[in-house]
Length: 90
Image (tube, rainbow, N blue to C red):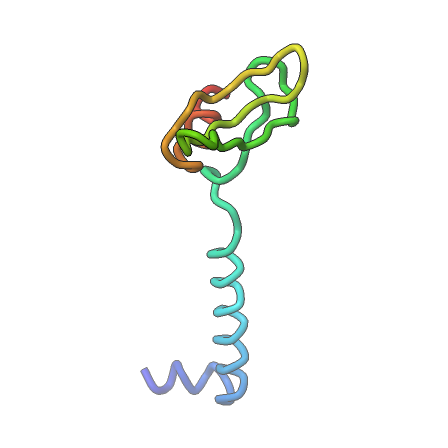
């Protein structure tokens, strides 16, 4: 095992490699997942879609602002559930 480690080079080279790998992991963790990407309207194809919160019930919903489409995800308890409902229709 020591022989394999020695073949990697100096300790500063190993530290640089580990630092670069750590940076790549952080970038991957911060990138959006497929579940976080807002899909276009399933009816008209518009990307003019906005998240709204009902100020009385505190429910969330996505709404296509392209007139005359005006499709909606339906009210959900959280923004993530509204996103899932919207993307589930697309």
